[in-house]
Length: 77
Image (cartoon, rainbow, N blue to C red; front, side):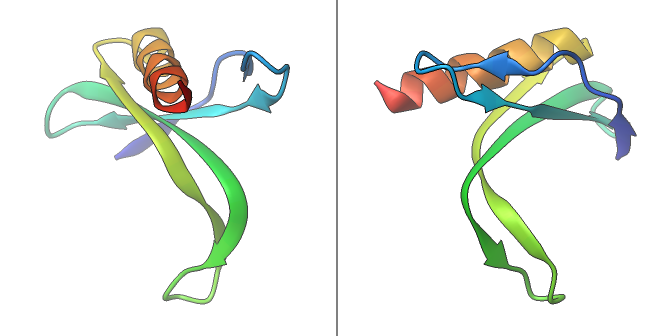
């Protein structure tokens, strides 16, 4: 997968900014967006990361980011 520099950060209903990271999946020829949140957890390699709270997939980076945001908002309600 290849990292795609991200679009504008989006905000949730409360006003918290969520950055949507987007990568290009060359196997499926799609873009995958993810939103991370919560407290950081230690990974098996020793690095610290936040958990993925929503994913989205699309044919363009904007579509993947928008889908991730929609999935995040549906999960919250």
